[in-house]
Every structure is written in C-alpha cells, then in structure tokens.
Image (cartoon, rainbow, N blue to C red; front, side):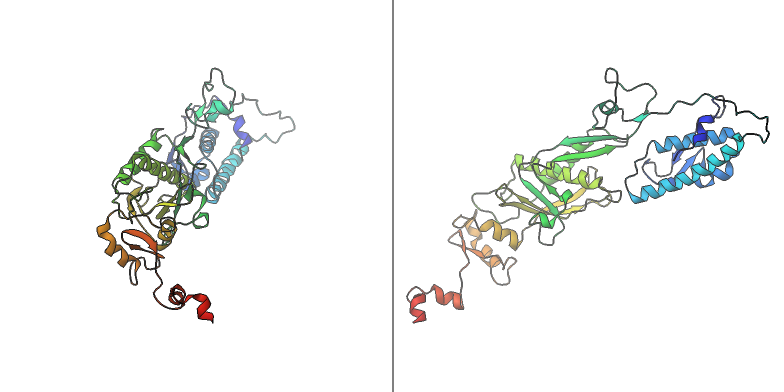
Length: 377
C-alpha cells in the first residue's frame, strides 16, 4: 500500500531527514526491530501528531520499502505490520489536511508533488544492474537514484556430477538429493546477493577456503592401480579445483534458498563420472551458522560404502590393487564381519575378482565334474 496523502506534504517543512535503524544491521527482515528517528514502528502512531513529523516518518517508511523483497511468508507478515503502521500515520495526516466544514471553503492549497524516489542496483558487474533493465545514457543510472541490493552470478565449471545429500551411506542418484545438492555441467552457476558488506569477488574467497580443505583430505579409499578419480594416493590439481567449484556452487545455492539456511545442509557427497562410475565419496562436517562464508565447512573426509564399492568394482574385475601387501587386510574387509561384507567382490593374487560362493546350491552348481545336466539325471 501507499499513503496518497504523502504527495500533499509541504516541501517547505523544516524537519530533518528521517533516520532509519535496524537492530540486526542486515536490512533484510524484522520490522519489529526497526526504528525511525529513534521510535519503534509500533509506537510511531502514538508519538506523532504534527504534519511535519507525519510526513517525515511516512517518507521513512517509503524508503524502508525500497530496500525490501517479499520473498517468503515471514517477510510478507512483516510487510503486513508495516502496512498497519503506515495506515495509522496516513489517517492522522488526512485529519490534519481535512477541509474545513464550510460551504465557502475551497480546495486545500495545492502543493508541489514530491518526485518519486527511484531505486536500483548501482554496480555494473551485477546481473541486476539498473541500466541492464532500464534506459540509461552512456550506461549510467540517473542522478539521485537510491542503491539497493545487487545480485551476482559466477560460472564455476565442472565436468563430472556431484551429488550432495544426507544419506547414511552416501548419495546414489537424483532421488537421493535435491536441486540444490545436484551439481553437474548444466547446473554449475553460483549466484549470490550483495548487501554492501562484502566485496563482489566473495565467491572466489569462499572457493579458496574450501579448496584448501580439499587439499588436506587424507586419502583412505580402496585404491587400485588405475587410480580413477579421487581413488588415488594424491588428488590431481584438476580434480581439486573442480571439487572446489562444485562445493562453492552448492554453498551459495543453499545459502540463498531461504533465510534459515545459515548452515550448509549436506553431510554426504558422491562424485560420478559421465559414465556413472563412482569417482569418490566423502563425508562433510559443516560449520554452524556459517553458510556462505570462507569457513563454511570445518572438515571433509573420504567415505566408502558397500553400495558405492559394488558399483565401482563391478567394472574393475581383473584390475590389480595398488599395494599387494594390503591383500590380506582387504579380504578381511570384504569378508564376514568386515566393514564391507556386503561387497560382492574380493581380492585374489592382488586382483579384483567376483566373490566365490562357498556353500549351498551355488557351490553344487559350480562343481565342474558333475554339471547341472548330470545332477538332474
């Protein structure tokens, strides 16, 4: 809503410019914490009586609206509160400007209409720069325009697929994650909003922070001699950079999804190649209330699961393990009571093989001298 009586405010009023303060300092939400000229919104109608103060504070509310985007239900509720305050102030102003009850009374003195304030983003590097959506001379916004929040977008490319989720054993497909947790060559755009408190290249600062974390990951997977993806004793620089790109995009996609996304919401990640072959699996420990900052994530660790190993080793029959001295230990991992006893593969002579069936009908069917046809007879 808008108070039409505001246009009748006399430009000769001597009241000082309004002063707006928010107790949280963000300028994003919470009108309950807003004060105009030191008076809380809820008390404004009861503490204002002159046309001078009414006009000044109504203009304050108008300026306050120019810096707001009604993105969710909570903010729309705050807007309703603001409407209520504005209506009460406007009603008082109407009373002061009301015509005298006389048949000879003429129209109220006409006053010059105050020019409407224009709001827009003033940063040419932003995606919502004022002159990208409005006519400007020499790509420069008009004089007197009031700056508002700017939106930024950066492409951080990836070649593989990164699935972020909260599954106990990892992420295994689109059904396990959300749009924010699915980063691929077609969804590798990081977007963010600048409230004026940080530099425009903040995205790259965050990427540097997560990249340093990735470089410190201790390789603990099941390693083969072909060393595909992150299953290597040392990650390649190309993979480290791509991992940092994917994680940075996910951080900003979740940060601006809604106001409550202050902590990175995912604890698992599985990386797949273009052929859907698992290239790495990790657990993520976020930092509380830090999403979107350089230290958004406290640590990242390699994490394996039976399901991922089955998918990975299925195409690795006959591939040699990286260190033959680890054969006995790996056999125990894949055996009864082992960490990965559900894996359908094992190690023999330093190579990946199908797990041998040791009892039951499977063993009978494997006996070459008898054969299925003789058994039936």
